[in-house]
Length: 339
Image 1 (cartoon, rainbow, N blue to C red):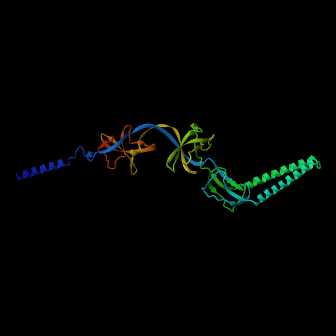
Image 2 (cartoon, one colour):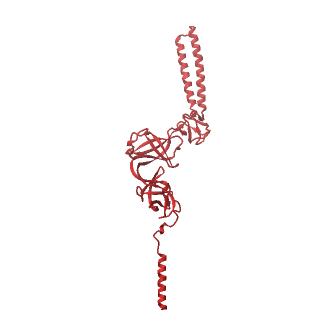
Image 3 (cartoon, one colour):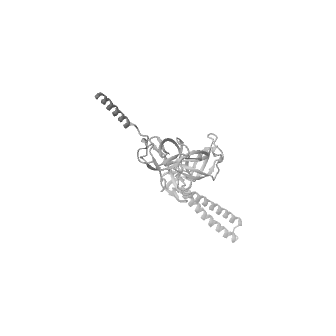
């Protein structure tokens, strides 16, 4: 009897233990119900864009060179300094040009006196009229010589052809300037363009005046410009066409890297709000709402446009995704949709 009681007791204890470890059907639902916002994944046609590297360049750029030989007398401007149109940038010390101008002016004064005297003698009948014509011709020659000397002397002063900034400076005060030697480079800051070469096939539908988006990588922004120039001929080697896109003032700087975005067509793309995608290491995740529960999905994303992300895989159109999922949200957890 004692042995029988012991066997029955052990059997009852085993049944009790088995009953305690049996999992309940709602185990994943443990935890509080989290309120969430949701959005529907929609498939929409978006533009297919071809991105082409470009460089920001000024529409006005001048490399100023000397027109006569002389030493730099004054050059008060430094790199990056702004100047206005017709402002004196530098002066050259050219004493021989000044001497030539003084000589021409002296010869002009003498020619004027000779012409006046010849006119007086002709009026008195002392000299023939031909002497007055000769004196007038010499006066005209002297005036032309003065004009030439003044024009040459004016080249000793270099002025800004337009408003801009100095981007290159090749000489300093005291250096010798010779004709054709670059002195400085001036670039306009008021009118900048993005210049790049695009495939001739993509350029077939582009025309001057058309709007074109330009992405500025340094700023992480995109601006819309207008095509100002398109090369009439494609490059025979690269089969590309040079395009220059005018930009709004104040959005870029000369030499900056950019990308021209050319629309080549449209395609259907699955889009969700960018705040629905979270990242864990190298993984991109989205929580999908199914029967009041949050289901974790691994997805692959593409482009981001206007606050929405392209989903390449891992999601179907029409599914509801959770926006800005809380940090406490777990797979299979019950959630409540906020109105």
